[in-house]
Image (cartoon, rainbow, N blue to C red; front, top):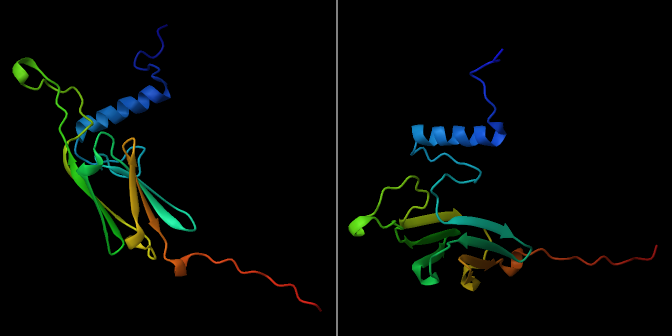
Length: 155
């Protein structure tokens, strides 16, 4: 008459969200990855791409001034460090109110990424626009692909 009272349809999305929330509550500091390729809490997020002429690194640091970041390269290792201010909601009498969920962390951060060989770090350039720092690292001339012309011969 009533069917199975224990079953209810949550839909695929609600079920996954419910399970993720349950796991986050049970194991809050596991560093488990979600849809990203790095553990949760890694900051700033970084994308790296390459062309025939260069490697481009994109550092996503929304809300930070370019002066707040320190970017360096040594032995093909890119290091990004800085500090992100805490964002606390205001409660009564200037004290922070309780968080119900907190996903944005503040404080000091440090990210290191290994880069491929053959980059000319002396010619590296960095630009910041809309919270994204683009670091352009040209390849050394001797490592760039060369086009070889084919000459026709008479038989």
